[in-house]
Image (cartoon, rainbow, N blue to C red; front, side, top):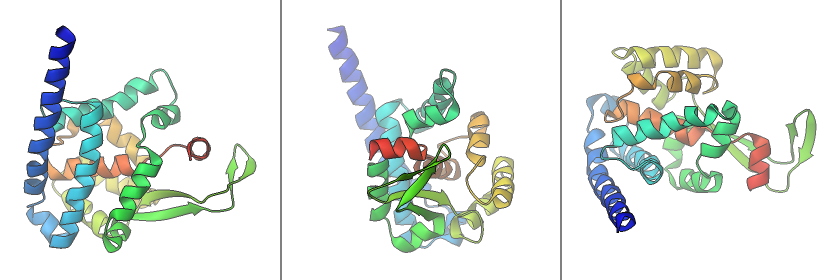
Length: 220
């Protein structure tokens, strides 16, 4: 009986969080600063991006609010890292690679290239000092740190939000997501995932981070 009640409560949380979330995300993108950098069509794609990562976060960390679900999910990286090194923690928690790539291929191509860039490994990759042949191309992505719609948007956000100012100053210098995501995880207490800029940034982080190439080879 207790198990049935627990399952019913979990199902109820998942249903109402997901149902309410679809409406909330569409409200969130009605944002004046987003309008400066993104077209109405772009914003429809941004809704899809956020809803995709929302569905994964909700399934793994159901809660009564998306803000809490994201905090639980992002915090779990550090909990895993207490027993593993950070890359091993990411290997455990990163979004299924094939599912992610299939989703990214469904996005409008012009918006995709305003957010990400591709790294495609076709013939061989270097793992632990040795070149390993690969049968099928492996795709990895990275955020565009400069002169893109997404970077210009977050730089503008940084004018009134110190954490994003720091994030994109470092990212502009490093040229990639690189160490920036670790700074994000170190400052999770400063994030409110009910805000469009914080939720979008979390979505981009979760979609961009990937397993190490050796783990990907084992999984594809």
